[in-house]
Figure 1: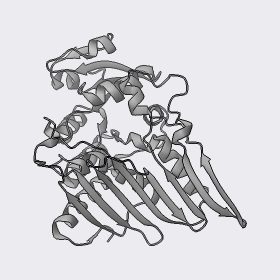
Figure 2 (figure 1 turned 180 degrees about the horizontal axis):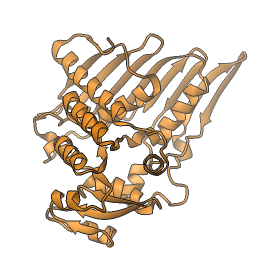
Figure 3 (figure 1 turned 120 degrees about the vertical axis):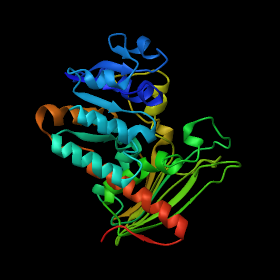
Figure 4 (figure 1 turned 135 degrees about the horizontal axis):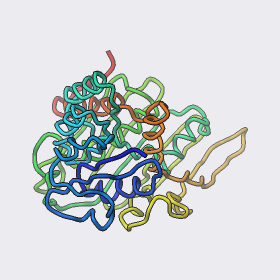
Length: 346
């Protein structure tokens, strides 16, 4: 088993990493950092609760550190874990700047250590369904891809995420997932054009973004907002043979918040009422039907981490791919500020 430490036990430790690692036979949570609280004791009684990060870094038994702290701490804590000889999984976003990410990757290469980033929404059921439809060319040649991740939160929370600083705002938060999904499907775009703004009354950080990612063969738009009261489609795909629309969010996060574990029966299964609609013309025949959503599976991320560290398999989410997400985010802010297209590929 991979002896693992959680660098914090906030929302991501309580809801995501803790439950997944708890049921995974390849991992043992040995240490959990909580500076003041003791929430983890009830969930992980066999883990040692520590008050300082140095206690984790000094423990020779720890092989893997999950850097799931607030975003502005990712760079420093990831760097220190690598210096201490630990493999790392970093919560998204990987770092706040491309320069920070490059430094982390260079250090990891020197020390022959693993860097991966928890881009769990590659294993959302709706995204797995979209990916399957694209790879199977069910829509013919894909010409348009839209991804929406909208919420309705018209108030300002008391949180570091609402304070004006680098890394705060919805582009780093929700945008990290959506950009990663687009890059996973289509690779780096030629250029991007973005609109990023604060729309809520009194907001100090961006809470709305639209990013046009240019590819020669596919129109790609990723967008998110905190001021969408009436839900629209999560994914909109159009191709030469038809269209696919999917609404609703993957059920895994909500299930985890309710305390369910990823080994529960029918884990990640979508409700039939949430299935997406396929409308295509196939061989002159019109077909309009619901498409069963693929089962989501966040545990697959850690399956891959185990297989990489123990069997030498290729990483599903290497740090270099996660750095490309930060590259797009930086370009999006530049584009929005200047009102210009920003080139991505040389």
